[in-house]
Length: 484
Image (cartoon, rainbow, N blue to C red):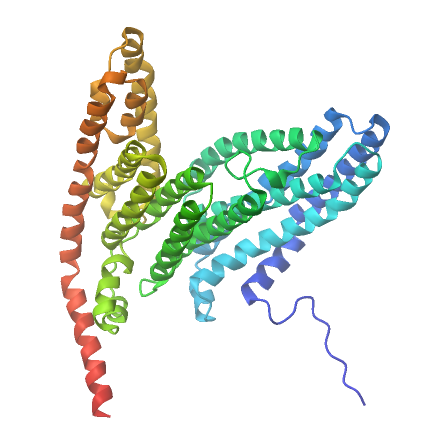
């Protein structure tokens, strides 16, 4: 007799966390309701497209409903993905199954990405039907659909990263404001995409920076940045729920460094040097947000992992060990790399402005350590609120105080005091004052990394006993091994 293999809905090679989340997600009423309503509307819009010859108004509604589902509704399914686990106290049970924090977070994201892909694939027959009616570029339509799915899964990773916050109102504020601003930008992007598709131009000829570049270079760079953004957001979430003995920070910082070096290398060997340098600066800001909001680690085994590798391990300890104190040293290294590349690609002035932008992040981190917020369980929410408050202050000062200086054609020297105000003041400064203004602003901005350095040294000295214990653990293990 021949044995019959049991039927399973998912192969065993998939992560159990992905299978668990995907099964739960596909069975929810929200997914079924969204799928049903979407297809009813798409049938209606497709019939209208056939009768109206793919009119621009009908095409706009067609694209709008797909964008709403892929880029808003499905990503928001991760709004409470991690918070529910924290509230129900089920994370410890998941950890007991030998699932790491990274696999838990990835499983939640992969579930949303798979559901989004399923819906995107189900839309393809409607795209082909509208192409048959005439007047559309099939490849351009499929490309736009792919970019919508890609943007949606990146947003899903961001929402999951912010879902680590326990308070509902806090998640609503932190997630709602960026999604509102990002939604406006995404709407503009897809409007331009529609215009380019209608004119017969392929989206693959547009780079992520919104300008024409070599398609063979820009599209891979854009896809690579999307993958890195997903990794960054999921790593940010995993750090918030990982145990204190985790070495996740080493993996994250190593990947960030490699990605930055690749971008700088591409900026050196391709014609997109100026654009890639801007992207590198944005990447640096996000990485600084992550490393400067980590809690100082006080687990000896974490430091012992570095001491086991001798001198190279001790050097890596200063940059890769978990904690914002080493994160500050790591941010100094990345800032130096970006500043040198910016100097070579865009000149000394752009490099100095880049240093001032980095000083804005160091200023926020320094304020975070000076204020009582340094005792918070998670430093990310205070950092974000400080950033929002600082931007509000900058906006108010710019609108109220900068106008009289601009009307009188006088340089607003007071903007040198704060790094976030410096770019605005520099843009409106008189031509004869720009050089002196920039130098004064740079010296003022460098005060903040000095303040943060003092705080980092104090925090590092506070872990001295922990590192001594790690050193003794390492030598005890080496001695025990030699004895046996």
